[in-house]
Amino acid sequence: MNDALLFHDSEVRLAFADGDTLRVQFSAAHVERREAGPRAGAPVLGYARTLELAFARAAWTGALHECVGRLVQGRLSAAGAAHARLPLPFDAPGPVRCELAFHNGTLLEVEAGAVSCRFTGDPRFVESYAC
Image 1 (tube, rainbow, N blue to C red):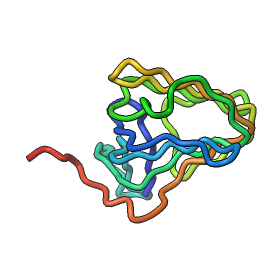
Image 2: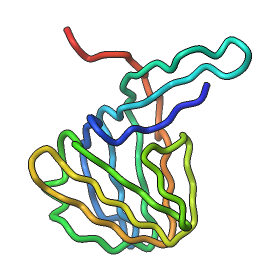
Image 3: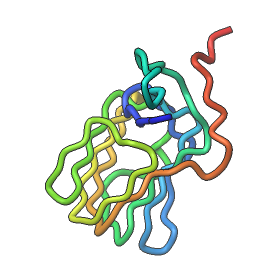
C-alpha cells in the first residue's frame, strides 16, 4: 500500500521540543491510501494514529502549547521540493521549511536541517471517525 499524509483536516495531539528536534504527533492524521500493483483503484481517504513529524536541528515560531487540534492547512518544502502531501514514510534532508496553520488560529513555522515522518506504532487506519 502507498500512504500519504494530507495536512488539512489532520488532528495534532502534541507538539514539543526534544533537544534540537521538534516533534509533531498526530492523533488522527488525514491519510490517502492507495493499493499498489495492478489492482490499484481510486484512493481511499481516512485517518491514522501514531504518525509523527520530526524536524531535526529545528528552529520555530509559534507557541507549541497552542499547536493542538485540527489543521486547516500545511505546507512543507525540503531540499528545494514543495510537498502538499507527504508519502509515508518520508525522509528528506534540508533545508526544510514547514508551515502548519491550526483551526484555533495558531501558526507554526519551522526551519530545520532534516525532516522525517513515520508511524511510531500501529496506525489503525479508519475511513471515518463519525458515529
